[in-house]
Length: 161
Image (cartoon, rainbow, N blue to C red; front, side, top):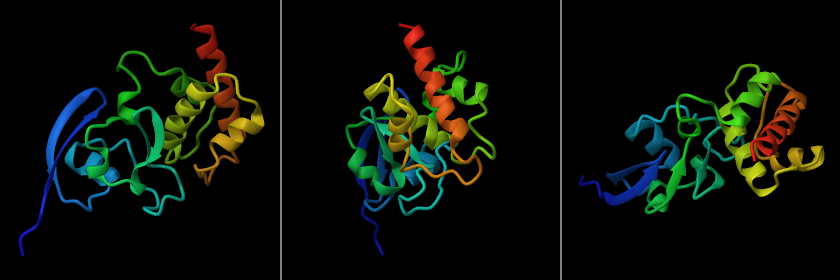
């Protein structure tokens, strides 16, 4: 049986890629399997957990709920593209400083959602942080230190201005 492929051009972590993809390939699988962006994890494949969250044109998106062909022409940022390799993003630093992780499986998605949240609302209340991250599940932490991490990141980002 002949498989149909569609050509897409997508910029991922600042690099433009042209690829032929099978039309039903999920963005998360394209990122991991075709581009090697394994920092974007597969959690549930049902869009419930948020572990696979990436930024698509600056907005947090669960990459298991989007087809790779839908990202044609888009700019995608994964957890691997948040840092320049020398200095961590303030959200990453704050998660480390405030112990906002335990097993770490949800952390890439939490960081990406937090970046989007802070870009939209640079000084969120605790309630706004909890609401902004409600699509990301953590089975370990109880969320307290995650909220503290986002609050600390907001302080760090404000201080950097």
